[in-house]
Image (cartoon, rainbow, N blue to C red; front, top):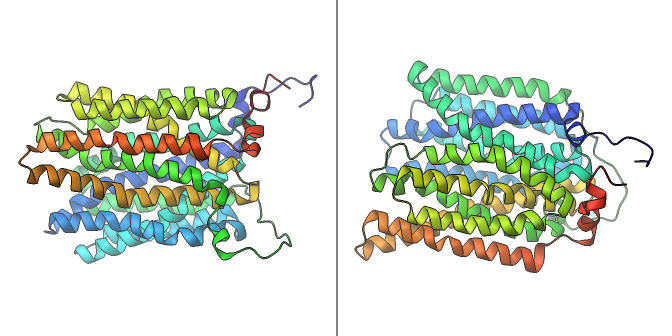
Amino acid sequence: MSAGRTAPSGWREIWSPAFLVIFGLNFVLNVSQFMVNALVPKLTDGFGASATTVGLVTGLFAATALLVRPFVGVATTRIRHSHLLAATAVVLLLAFACFAFAGDVTAVVIGRLLQGFGMGFLAPVTLAMASNALPERRMASGIGLFSLGQAIGMAIGPAIGLWLERLLGYGPTFAISAGAMAVVAVLAPLVRSESPRRESRPRERLWRSFIAPEAIAPAIVIFFLGGAYSVVNSFVILYGESMGIESIGLFFTAYALALLVSRPIAGPIADRFGLTAVIVPGTLIYGVAFFLISTARSLPEFLVAGAVSAFGYGICQPAVQTLALLAVSRERRGIASNTNYMGLDLSYLVLPVAAGALVSAGHEAGWADADAYSLMFRFMIIPVAIGLAVYVLFARPTPRTRDDLSPGALNPTEG
């Protein structure tokens, strides 16, 4: 930008037509996902499934998402992203149709497998499309705002799904979600996206087609930070109920509402001062949030812990995603995003199991449920600390990302 030209406002730089459209589609996708995710366990339980089966059906989602990750990286470099998004929406439509017409647990399992397949593609593709629609000097702010679509979906999706289920029943509610996927499938090809570059280059090793080495360190960071939050998703409801706390689900509402404040603040800070200015204090706050969860004994205390979490993990997640995206060239951002989500998928499979083992150990030692959960949440400070250590030692911005994220490059009033 020349010195004599007036710089456009930061918001106008971010909210381009391309970014606005992909933000809207991502919002619809996330609301539908959280509507469905809130109902699938109830639907499975309604078929008389055991608690173990309910847990297995839930776990299949992350497992199949992880299995398709190797194919996502290849696809994002060879197929136009808008076409990938449309195909993914069709797969999710089929998954939701399985739920809508399910007559037994088998149909739910098939739907869940399809849903995991679709979600394995969805997050990396939409994140790559959003990053390509953003100016690099506004990347941190833009990715933070883009992720608000997920936060808002988390806040309102389950409530909408449960309300519609009570009003209409399972079948029509899942059909509405399937209809939303049909709308996305129709609109996605209309989104402007770049054609994959067909450059002649030396043949790469196969693993580099689905893993970006530059994004491995950020993926390890998100493994520990995201895994710790997956433990919250898995056990905070049971923890609150063990103490007789009603409406403990408001913990997630407090988290999502606080994100509406934390992420718009964190993005400009990262743009101006660098990602470290967000990730390091955010991780420390995240550790404090787990201490607050472990000591909470009333609903207001849980709500405070949920809000504090939004200023911890809530600002770290998009910052680490930004770090991974800026570590690679533009055409490899789909692969970098895929690498980041592989770390997240693995964490969803590993850390909740480890946390459950800690709770079981507490039960075997004769501890009350609340005490066992409290100790487990206190232990979750350890993976948060490991994530911070990995970032400081291995994942801080490379020379490439330092150039992209220097204050002069990112502040539109300079240069």
